[in-house]
Image: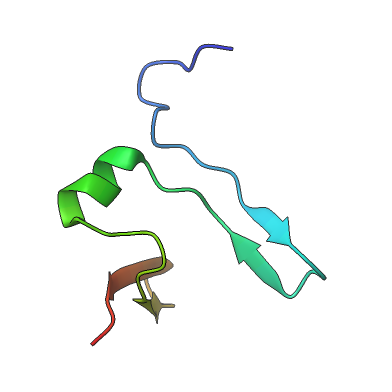
Length: 59
């Protein structure tokens, strides 16, 4: 099924394993832009006020 214009970055949340973890796929363009590699550690920050999740390189 073809995606409508403007929907190319719409993703579904998926449950992983026993249900205590969820995942979401990222567009390959994002992975390439930030030069992230498989297995790389990322830090997840939560902005509850604005309902945002921020991903950044783990130091």
